[in-house]
Length: 477
Ligand SMILES: Nc1ncnc2c1ncn2[C@@H]1O[C@H](COP(=O)(O)OP(=O)(O)O)[C@@H](O)[C@H]1O
Ligand SMILES: [Mg+2]
Image 1 (cartoon, rainbow, N blue to C red):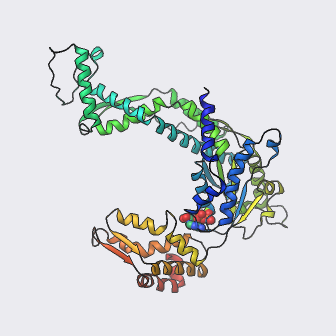
Image 2: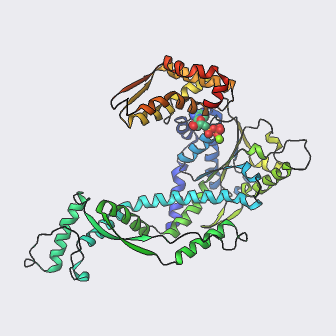
Image 3: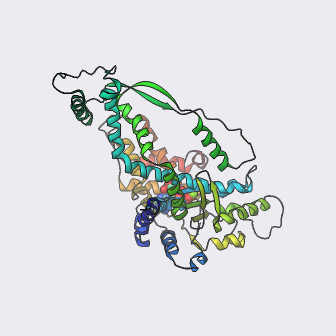
């Protein structure tokens, strides 16, 4: 069986099982409103699978369904893309387009977003593989610890290690190795039951070689070859080991890492990660409006560099091969989601070729006071729930009554209108200001098992004067 192929197909199945409707249901658990955007990202995800399954030459001609999310700040653009990736278990990376217009950036730097994507992918695949070998690795670790406690007869000539464990056995009763085996069995049992976790043992700990070989070929190589060479050099340096006396519990952690990396073939990880990024990767390009030149303005100055960045982005979005330290990745099937407020520039100010690569345009709605109320309350990771969890970790029980949540939503909305509209981000600053005193008092004056009920009056008392004072709220809320 071709292991690599098998795995890639496996991964593909994971997310191709999700229908557009199911994806929207998942997104609904975290994001309030924005149905249009949810629908479209769900379709785009599904279309990618559809496109990969198209037979014949036409497959190459089907343009990927990259998406342009248009909406002001803090309405959920990034959150939707991030959640989509989580749901699809897809490697995800986010980049601000405007950073490529900064001084010092050169054309090929835009490829760094693809390298980041592969990095994320390696991380995902490695986690998955580590998880797969976890049981096996744990067994190997137990055996390794047993070897330290009771060295195998044949090798060490039965020298008891310097641990303080006494083993009561009678050497007359059985041949050495059988006896040894029985002792090991007993200790294996004790290890499994966690009876020995606090005992100290001496183990060899690998030390990573010093880093900082950064000057080679400065400026003559791209990041990928640079990193490759660094890896190669550190691979060639002899690995130093150091003896350390640690508890069995700690030894288990250290050895677990070693055993896992022995069981996971990194070449396989690399290969699988490249395929996963190619087929399942999502790149989020934020602030794309900042690299659109406003129409009507002729050449000169920053506009040239903005258009330059668009031209550099184009091959990546169109599909090209990018060299990374793990190998070459083809970006043909990578899903690109671009986002911007487009308050000044319009999508039509992007160069036509790039416009053509983002055929799906979705406008996100500005959030209403009622949306704020729901955002505070409903999502799985809603702010009220986050704070409750924080307090609960000290056994203080925080609750909000409904009017209080309404009041917070109302005030947040008001500040957005009066000061600056930063969307749902405003809820973070408002909540933090509202709860800061409590957070400071726990556990000193507000002790464990206390209850805090946030009421409308409390919210007003703490926030209304601030909201009224524009100068103050600019800084604090
Ligand atoms: N529609 C929404 N539903 C739930 N939370 C939201 C929504 N819009 C924004 N948020 C929250 O506000 C914060 C900023 O959202 P984000 O998606 O980063 O905004 P942007 O549109 O600027 O990318 C995040 O904490 C996010 O969870
Ligand atoms: Mg954002």
